[in-house]
Image (cartoon, rainbow, N blue to C red; front, side):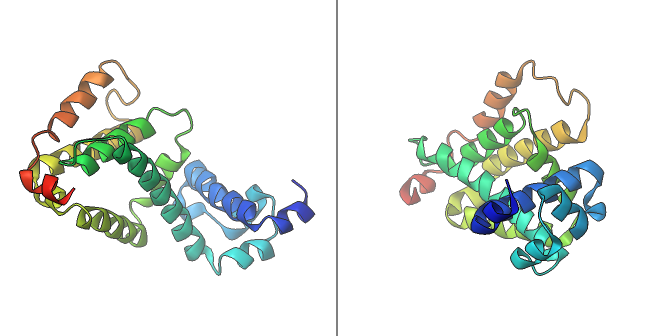
Length: 194
C-alpha cells in the first residue's frame, strides 16, 4: 500500500502498527520492541506512528487491548450460540482459548504470553476479566467455573510455553470436553441472571 493510500486509511495504519508490535514482540521479546522497529515493520514513518500513539507504552498497551478485544469478540460470538445461561461465559472462554491455540498463526496469543509479565498488561487483563465476570456474577463465585477457566489458562500456557506435549493435539476433543464438564450444572442463580 503506498503512502498516499495509508494517509487516507488511518484505521489500516493503526491496525498495521498494532500487528507490527505483536510481530516484533514475538520475534525478540517485549523489551526489544522499539518505535523505530514497529514503524519500519508497519511500513510507516515514526511521525505516522506518533500520530496514532503518543509513546511506546501507549503503543504496547493498545496492542494488548486489541488482543483482549479480539478475544472478547470471539467469546461474545460463542456466547450468542450457547442457549444455556448457567456457565455460558466460562464455556465460551474455554472454547475461545482452545480455539486460539488451533490456528496456524498464534502471534497474538504468543504476544499475550510475552506481555503477561508486564504489570500494565496484567492490570488490563484483571480489569477485562473482572468486567466480564461482573456481567455474570454467579460465574465469578462458582469454584467449578473458576477451575474450568484456570484449566483453559493452563492449556494456553502449555501450548505457548512449549511444555510437555505442547503441540500434541491427540485427545484434544476429550480434554476440551473434560474442561467443559466443569461448566455444567452451574448454580441455578446464574439462570435467573442470564
